[in-house]
Every structure is written in C-alpha cells, then in structure tokens.
Length: 159
Ligand SMILES: *[C@@H]1O[C@H](CO)[C@@H](O)[C@H](O)[C@H]1NC(C)=O
Ligand SMILES: [Cu+2]
Image (cartoon, rainbow, N blue to C red; front, side, top):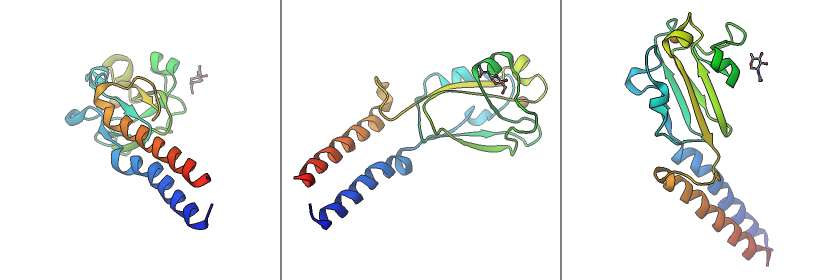
C-alpha cells in the first residue's frame, strides 16, 4: 500500500467521522419558545424527538430563576439535586449529548421539580442504534453509507 493511498484513506475516514458532528448535529432549545420553566410538559415536548450523540440541548431561562442539574433515575424520581451549587445556572446552558442512553435533568430551585414538573428525561441514541424512527432516516442513512464507503476503501487499499 502506497503512502498516497494511506493519505487518501486517512482523509476520507476523517471526513466520514467528523462530518456528522458538524453538519447533522441538531440543537434543541428545551421547551422551544417557552424555554426551561415551570408548568411545562417536557415529556410531551420530547416524545416525538430523536436525540443522537453529538446533538445539543439548550436550556434557556432568566438566570437566577432556575438552574439545571443532570441527575440519575432515582434522583429524577425524587427530585433530589446532587451537591447544591454544582448545577448549570447561566440561563443559556448548552449541554452536548456525549453518550447514548437515558439522560435526566431537573431544576434545583425550590420545588420546581417536585411540584411544578420542571424535569426532563430523554433517550440519546448512538449512531448505530437499531430501528431508527422514520424522521431520523437521513442521519442514519448517512452513517451507514459512510461506513460502507470506509470498508470498501479499506479493502481496496489493503490489496
Ligand atoms: C443517584 O445520585 C445520587 C446523588 O448524586 C446518589 O446519591 C445515588 O447514589 C445515585 N443512585 C444511583 C442508583 O446511582
Ligand atoms: Cu426552576
């Protein structure tokens, strides 16, 4: 295998891996125009969305009025924040969904979580997660396509 084909393969693989992050990652403003607030149904907001690794959540609110704590399932159920003061509180908190799986977020102010429903749970899918919903077909198709291209290139360059 020549140095040239090594370089070509490196470039193609790099583009294949980086492109989805830059061009297909989706930014979700939690609650859309309502932002991060009390008495909003975040489960209803999340239910039709497909969250993927690399997507971002933006929690928008008036700084001081709310905050954002990433918690586990049991803390989510009981509305218990971890160490006070460790949450996000800028009023424009951007969270990158770095790993697949369930993610739980609650507001740690007063009883906003316990009494006023200010809590969000989402399920983040990896790029090769099985059975994507129809509206994620483009993202999923791209990854599959690039995986095939990389495999074919690898086979060609090895010979
Ligand atoms: C959930 O988080 C709380 C607070 O950080 C911690 O005390 C608890 O052990 C965790 N529970 C599980 C099941 O990980
Ligand atoms: Cu709040």
